[in-house]
Image 1 (cartoon, one colour):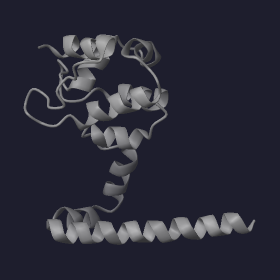
Image 2 (cartoon, rainbow, N blue to C red):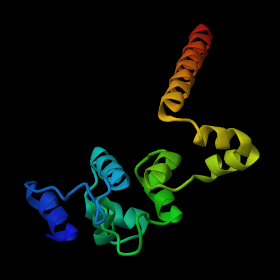
Image 3 (cartoon, rainbow, N blue to C red):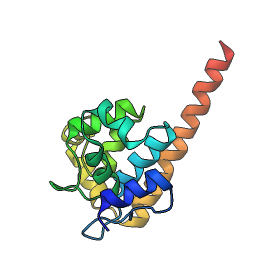
Length: 150
């Protein structure tokens, strides 16, 4: 069943969901994220479409991972979606498998660091990620303690 038809059935009678896997068998992380944000913000496809300057059929195809022109929409459309859905643009860009400018600039500033990260095996990468998460939590606790003391 075509994506648009199945998404329209979902929108109109709520009985069917389009597949979360796109034409080439990959999970549609970006489309699922957009759908979740759209629903969280209380928009239908028809309500969100004019806010981001596309037709509702285009949004349907994005959510179902069945774009006619590639795996993800343009950076410009991702920006408009982030604004309309009050979401983090960098997160949406990454979900669409695009590197945000803010991250690309850091990569080019410190290519040696990113090359080392890319060469880490999964265990080492997980260990580093956990270490960074712990540091972020400590930083967040420290800043909330300072705020609470003001």
